[in-house]
Image 1: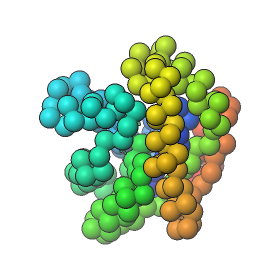
Image 2: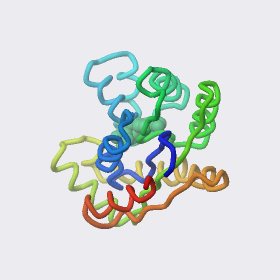
Image 3: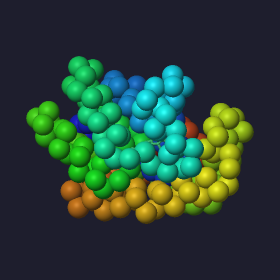
Length: 190
Ligand code: AMP
């Protein structure tokens, strides 16, 4: 049984969010999605939301300092003391390093990174489908999709090497039904 300080990782469209909701429920920890947090701020027109939108609209990452401060504040709340499921963070090696620092300051550490693997072709198909269902602007435009895939490869994927070295990485095949993938995810925590 892995501990309950968990990151769920994977390219855009891997099905991370869906798996994250189910896993957070299984582990009884808060689901902390940086994408959802940014969308909340955008919707409410906060200063943070205006900044975030100028990046997310182009499929770019919101700058690390802004993102890290937001996550630090969230992880400092009481409900994250007994565990958390981070979804969409970290998305760069500096964010991964910052997370280790935040957790060390809170006298804890990361237990496990669940990496959902899917091919690039599958990602494109899934993002196009999600655009039709959820109406997310950043899923609809092929050039924005390409930006998000490129951003993932150049900035986010290197996190896998960071976590592999630390022995925290668990690879999951992301192809299959939601239930099939979740069975694989759950096995990590048996
Ligand atoms: P998501 O819903 O996780 O795909 O996130 C939507 C958008 O929010 C991303 O394309 C980024 O612009 C922004 N975002 C979410 N998480 C992060 C992060 N950890 N670092 C920087 N930007 C992020």
